[in-house]
Length: 219
Image 1 (cartoon, rainbow, N blue to C red):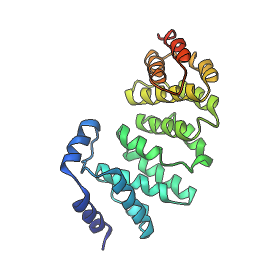
Image 2 (cartoon, rainbow, N blue to C red; image 1 turned 90 degrees about the horizontal axis):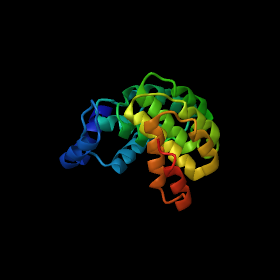
Image 3 (cartoon, rainbow, N blue to C red; image 1 turned 90 degrees about the vertical axis):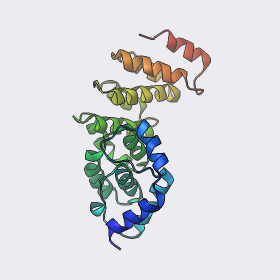
Image 4 (cartoon, rainbow, N blue to C red; image 1 turned 135 degrees about the vertical axis):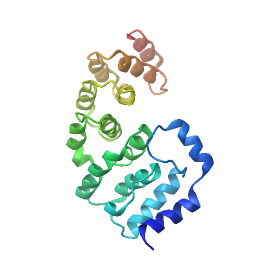
């Protein structure tokens, strides 16, 4: 069975028109959405690796194809190959959901952290968001001050980049309130600053007193 036939068989069995319509309301993408559950996509990606398919043979024609490729990278053991595959796949990411679902699965790429730091300067906004989400997920707790300083310094007008910045700063308040506060004071972007406060105040992991203090800093 060819890889195209393998994929077609999978989609024929797993796609859902109802889920596709639901996903379209949440995700703005240039790619077709077939409507397949995330768990099924991950199982399929794992099976592709097990069957010995090459990453470069994977189709990248619809929303789910891109997610499968990202999950394929998750199951690849060789770090150099993971990075090579990721560099190709990043060019296909055009929405927040694909970005976040793939970034949060790449937990064993810490040795390549400089790649993600450099990605913060990329001209593509979703590559920047990808870097922020990865750094928040895997670098923030071990290197909080450096991560936050780099992320606060990012200046973009893209809503999804700004929300990722706010999300990371809010998480920083949970990890170390005082250290994050010192860096937060350098955040000149009103939207990012206020969203950071809002998201931090929605968390149950910081105290009532800390929340009241943050509210007074709203710009």
